[in-house]
Image (cartoon, rainbow over all chains, first blue to last red; front, side, top):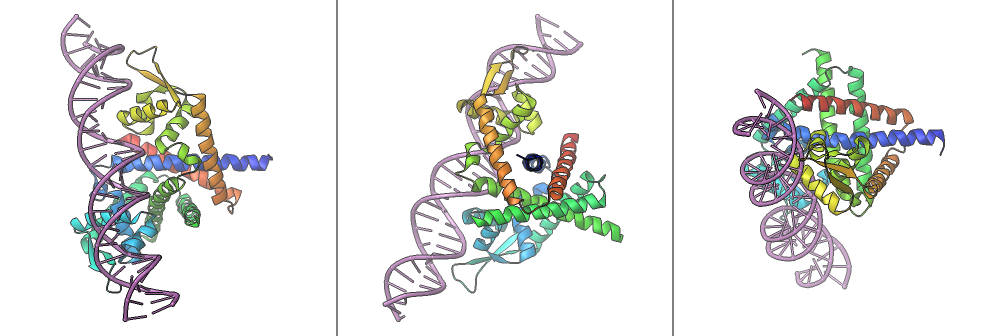
Length: 155
Length: 155
DNA sequence: GAAATTACCTGTACGATACAGCTATCTGGG
DNA sequence: CCCAGATAGCTGTATCGTACAGGTAATTTC
């Protein structure tokens, strides 16, 4: 193996390590913020509401596909959200089998509160960072996610 | 709010978004690689073996504290690993209550295989990236994790 | 040396998820 | 136009990772 290949290998190993660590820490953080604002919304509920916010009302299958989840999982999550009044189910006028899921104002408001709390948290954590570094992190994470997503969809 | 503050807010929001997305994609990837090498080791097993590898034999409490997990969780994970011959439990000579957990050669080898498979995966995904970008990503992720960890420990 | 603490284990519960199977509906080839 | 197959969503069931509460044994503290 050339020196270059070796360096590349090392870097990839570091990325692997850091991503694994981030997943663990992220989980722990989510759990740890138990009684706080975060707890208003469990994980899946948050991502569903978020997606409804940016992508608009849509049916269960579309949500499942977009979020890489099984349809049954989304069905249950959506049921819980409906019970709490955070989303509404309406029959799909164009397809009798379908149900269109839309976020309610209460749902969007709740989601925005959680989002704000999380953003604030990142603000505290990254207080010592330069704006450039924060920007670069956002950008590289975005590209990493694109790569991961592309790879997931390919199979 | 000044323009600068606003820009900062936007960046933090992006970071929040991307981290959330990464967690989802990471989960999906882990699940998706069902029949592959990854499956040889479920998530917690992998991190435990990894930690034993870098930090050496230690007792359950130390592992739990380091991995931000409840002691009972580690106990069970360790039991499963022991059943599979990947770790060994020995009584702590210095403390009759304690059990020292150490990775077996089989455990280390299995862990290394998973690690290699994951690293290879990152290599494929990030094939189009410059070495500089990969390096920067590793570095920024590392710093993000430090920040997250510091914040978790503070409370 | 008794009281408080600690280490680990076990029972139990919960949340998120997947897969298999069901029903209702839709769609395309004859 | 009709039926065979596909699709949308729901429900039953199983698994995994995790936490919390409670128990027992060993250790530390005063």
